[in-house]
Structure formats: structure tokens, C-alpha cells
Image (cartoon, one colour):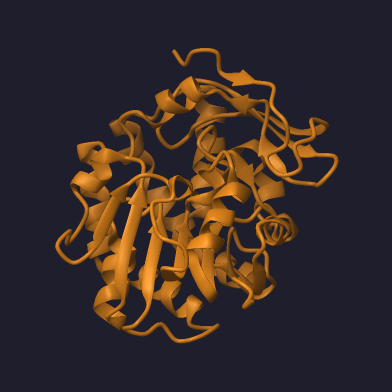
Length: 321
């Protein structure tokens, strides 16, 4: 069992401790670790957070054997080396290029780089120099093309990189895990050259599906996701770090509906905390395929059109002095 799940802690942004509860009974429905968590909104600044805060011991247990397991490694490699994974990284790259082209003189730093697949794609597609930072030794031990990319086992806040040494810093599905997002973004500002860009991709609290599914909404991803950013609170966060938002858009997130519906249906049928067996997954697989293609994908294009899809990308610039 997870030890002492939560602790009282102030808001991650404004440091006040006055919250409005929003959701209870939020569970890990990806790795199926034990524990039930809550989500609340700070009354002062509006930032939505997993609160009370998961303890360090809770998070250590929640992450243990997840991203760096042989099964996860094989799954991620298969995904990112396949057509869909490469298309996703192309999507990320051309989103940055809505602000300015990525060229071979760029130095791209990916924070929370995992196995380095985005860096690999950016290097192959644009010839950029690349550096990956992560705090998981297992991921870096199996990172792709280590002879072409510099990998470091440390967070950005540990002065891992010299000041004004990067032109682009990416946080891809990373900042929502960070217990000190403003501090981390201030470190990014220090590492960026004046005029350099930060690209942040993460779930969007304003999603059209979020109020429909409530505690079953897949991007809640408790307890690993500590912060649940809306468009406004993400912009407020980057401004608090001394960065200037220059482009903000929602991102297509196919599977948002499918995975949220799966969580709700499984709990309704089998009870809270029940982990699906392989036989159950095979039994329901045809249903999820139908939901994905008939409902999920069309809804994502519509929600993207009206700015309510399940993910967002914010690009901010370090102001020129």
C-alpha cells in the first residue's frame, strides 16, 4: 500500500492555502497503483491542483516500475518509432514553428525527455543540437542515439546547463508533474538565450470532455499529475517566471474520450480500484476500437476547432533585454 498518501501544503503558485474542493475519488487508472485522491482549486489564484498534496513517499511508490519498466520501454519504443509516434513529434515540431523555424543552429533542451524520441526526431528533421534532462536513470540508460544527444540525470533547477546556452526548451507532458513549476520555468529562463523559446505541452483543464467525465477524466492521471492547468493559469504561471506567452493553442488528443469512458465503465462494472485483467481487456477491445474511430477522433477535431480539446501547447519567449 502507498504510505501516508497526502499532506497539507500551500498552492504551488501563490503559496496560499485556501482551496475549493472539486473532485474526490480520483484514482490512478493507468498503472492502477492504490490510493484515492482529490482535486481542488486555489481560491486566490485559481490554479487547480491535486490536493492535499501527495507525499514524496506516495509519488515514489506511484512512479516505481512505471516508465522505466521493460513493458513500458517496449511500448514507448514501438509507439514513437512507428508512424503515429513520428507524426506526433512532427506535430510538436511544427507547432513550435508557428512562432519561428527550427534550424540546425538551434540547441533544443527537452526537460523530462524520457527515452529522447522527440529530440531524435528534431535532430533528424532539422539538424538541431539536442540535450535531454530526466530524473529517471532507467529511461536515460535506454535513451535513443546517446552518441548524438547529450543526456543528463538531473532536473533543470540543479543548474545542469550554463546560462543562455539553449535556444528552445521543451516540456512535453512534464510540467504538470513538477512540484515547483514556477521555479523550474525560472531556471528555463536563465538557460535560454534572450528571445529563446519555451514550449509547454500538457493536459488542458478547459477540455470539453472534462466536466462530462469528472473524476474519470483520463488526463487527471492521479497522483502523478500535481497541477491541472487551464489556459489562463498556464499563462499566469509562465508570466510569473518572467516569460512572455507568444502562442497558445489546444492540441488534438485522440483517446481522451476512449480512455475516460473505459475508466468510468470499468468502475461501474467492477468497482473502484479494480485493475483490468488481460481477458477483460481482450473482451472489451472491439468496443474501444469503435468508440475511438466513431466518436473519439471526430470529437477531437471539433474540440480542437473550438479550443476545447484535451491538451494544450503554450509557447513563451524570454524577453530580450
